[in-house]
Image 1 (cartoon, helix red, strand yellow):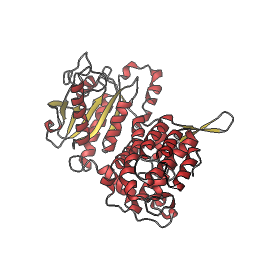
Image 2: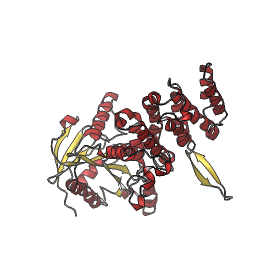
Image 3: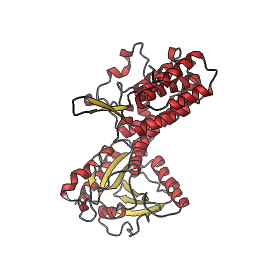
Image 4: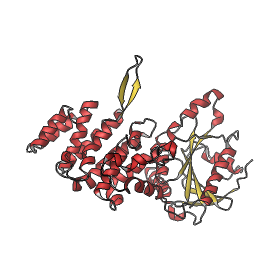
Length: 431
């Protein structure tokens, strides 16, 4: 049995009430009926350390437990089940959001999921939030004593979307408890060996990614652009096969507030970096948009974030004729939706040896809604970009024609070349 001496220290209802210490913290999170308190008691080997209740969701604050001299556990309120008033639920949601986004001691989150149901949107959103900060995610499949041996493989498959194999645990039978103890204690050892969350900014991972994408000289020829010299993942490449949730979370964070993060780069560097992000021949960032294993809300957020990029970056910095590419950002402004929409499909083999291209209707719908907003931006560059994307949606998904027609109706005095292009987009004949 692994020694795991845990003691209750304090409760907090806000970030400023959390213990002021240098311990690395591992948060325990999960739905209200996942058996979190029982598992915490099993980890500590103390029956009454965490209060259990027949009514799920009784934990309404952050409960801190010291583990040894340098580690701590934080038991987060459960989500998704407990009956409470709207005001109280909003306070708890804010408290958890504040803790996960701003607590510098937080080193890892153990996300507890009933192995019989697998992770859902709440758990995947939490994992994405943690990954955005560079916080390790430890999936834990609880109540595994409820599974038959023949059901194990299917239960494991349910965790594919988390991209990390879960630790199967049971507070009743004790299965996996030592494995989870060992994993949590490993967080403490890694925190001691490397610069910890309390000594460096937790945004370092995002900042490193940002520098890796944009901080390069601008190549004269496409074949000389920096990423062609970057080793593939199996050759030591660090970001080309970035896990999908942090990849999309980083992209969305950047696109939502581009000026905040890109002010130190030239427009030419930004164009080169955005091309790398969006083009699936260069990186896999946008490849994950069509991967159904990745949380749908995160994929939709990434699509929506292109509106922020258009308003803040493209509108003020691109020319009125992006097709000709007279300014550095014209190319990516015009081609972004081509790369994002035209390739937003995957191939499925048919019985006769041919294949079909299959699109994700939810992503197409989100793209249409986002383009409907972008085409209203008072910028000819953004409007041409939107027409390009809508034209591909008309051709590839039979969507968006009504938005193009409304644009034509609302702009009777359009420049002749843009009107001609919009009419071609209406027929799905854009390049």
